Image (tube, rainbow, N blue to C red; front, side, top):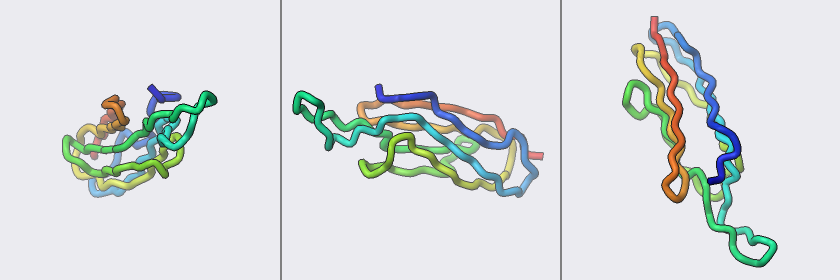
Length: 109
């Protein structure tokens, strides 16, 4: 596992209906590209966060596929429009099948 620290999300707990709000996410991950060698000369296997998805009330609201060129500790900032109260679900998928998740409740007034 290459997780350096748990995922973090900054998103409001409540917003007005129709308001556009900012979401920021960060996951501490070493993002091994598969292009580096260990001191003994063997290739360090690729192990990156290869996909990030944000679901709003169960529907994909934002997603991105990642590749080797992404820096360690991927950070995303994006905006959503508040339509109804629900859950913001965040999911980071790593090579090898590991998945890291986080959820935040959102109240729309």
